[in-house]
Length: 402
Image 1 (cartoon, helix red, strand yellow):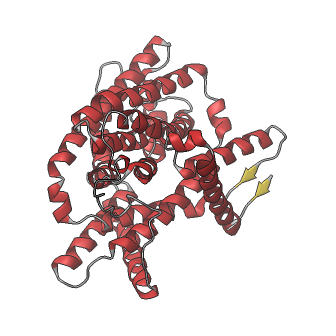
Image 2 (tube, one colour; image 1 turned 90 degrees about the horizontal axis):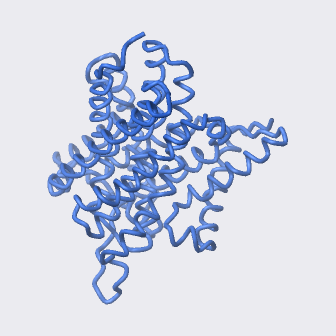
Image 3 (cartoon, helix red, strand yellow; image 1 turned 135 degrees about the vertical axis):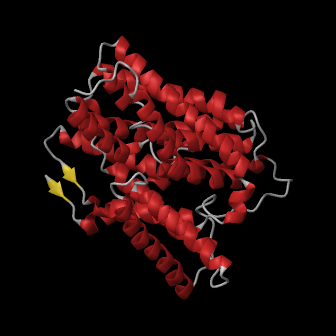
């Protein structure tokens, strides 16, 4: 076994990003279908490690940096959100939220229905529904423990982690192709050079050069650090209460308060370009570490019925994004980018959604409304709605506490 320490893992993650950049640049399929660079590089490395494992060679990474990077990314999302912009996108956020809630209901209905058809415990269907797909690893691990302790479902935690991992992979793979299909039906900003292009903001174009200074960098880094510290303290205060929320939601909330509080008091204006640079660095490294450290053999170990359910969920996500999300959001270019983002966090996580949308906007042009709506819904509202939907399903007659 080869164990990489903190520094070795950081080097590996950086090389994965460079590898992903090279692959997307040189492989037409990856470029044409808008596969995010961290996904391309990370999955290739994960596949190589899977092959090495067949020769009894296992590589393990120090993933201690993964959570801070994820939290830093959500802090920058909060620092990028000003109330004036949120007010403008209020109606769009509401409509997208309804679409997201609809998917949660469909995912659980599909999971439970297929579980019963395949002769499995309905709880396994629920665990392969919105709990792990829209909820991700954190939500999956939490509910897996509940199902094991309160409902007596064996290996619930292992199933939850494997299902969430499957979703993370598929969420990063189907978003680009779905967007490509939809963009063929609409007019994308980048397809008509004679038009005056809209200026990209924030996370829309991560490769755009942005002027920074050492002092402004330190200012922005301080804001992110304060968001991390205060967010973790807030999470500790809310533990065990009805207001308990995931840590990243608390960090994002503190970022929003900092951004708008300092602005309202006239004390400081957040430097958005720098926030986006640090946010994109955190996002890219987080995804690289998450994907290169995937244990694909855990997916291979899934029983065939569970794999069938998860494959069906991926198909349903793609169809939902095409026929529901795209249409209710206006059937335009912004709706296509939103559909790609929905695939990202509907199967995986909000960082995957952002990466999906970046892959699309880098090629076709900016979509400010998508980068306003998806982080808000994917990082905050979806967790609240998901808990409500899950508890409503658990109230059904065929779910009984052991």
